[in-house]
Length: 357
Image 1 (cartoon, rainbow, N blue to C red):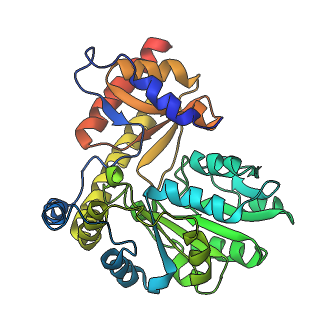
Image 2: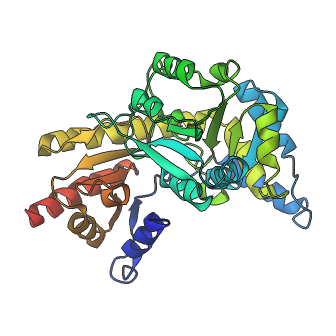
């Protein structure tokens, strides 16, 4: 159902003000470390130097930073008011009623809403038994009506990842007329080897589109800024449905300051990894299955319907995402908070499960 996830989050917030001093937001994959301290200075300068002027519709300064960081051409970048806007712009630019979009069964729900809003058909490909994306199943679902494929790597909500070789073999088999939307919102959290070099691969495949966000590792979710990287031709096509001033001057200034601060981003990744490992250790001790994650969240099988558990955790001050939002009723998805929050969550989780069993 469209907007079901947003309604669910709103429902979880009802009647908590006053009864609980502070809620721990472990449901939206927000960055608990905030953002780079350099962002504050950038925002003050932006506010002092022209809040009455319209934003730079070309995002020149931020565009230059993206070009430098990712080795792409300046005309191969398009910015959006968060990745959500880009997802909807892609739907408006490429989809018509009767078209099909192939996507793994467990994926980010905003794509589903965008596809359906254009009257197109969503074709879901089954997941592997370990909750990872089955790229062969995705390929098998492609028909002559398929306009594009959506792949999230690492995936949301499962946190799983596939390798450079797997992605390369996949791209070789995708029909040239089918676009591939490669969502890498959580790629910065990946620690290890063999993660796909999608930027290099994109130069070999004109049908490949990369989606990125400043909401996660950079901690700028409230500023709503994301971007896509693709060929100039694809960027120009999507730009036709873009509002001229869709990204504010303050959002661009914040993003420029954030992307330059590699030390902050590395700190975020290290703390996120430590919190994830801490949660794994305690889930192992408690005997609960979880999907090994390469992101800022963990999907946990609680072996019962998620609603009572979500409510019990809420009553203890912890908001988590119910698996029912994704069609997996016995799971919850837990975002990584600070280490203090994760310690509190483990205690609340243990008490909640004991109280329900």
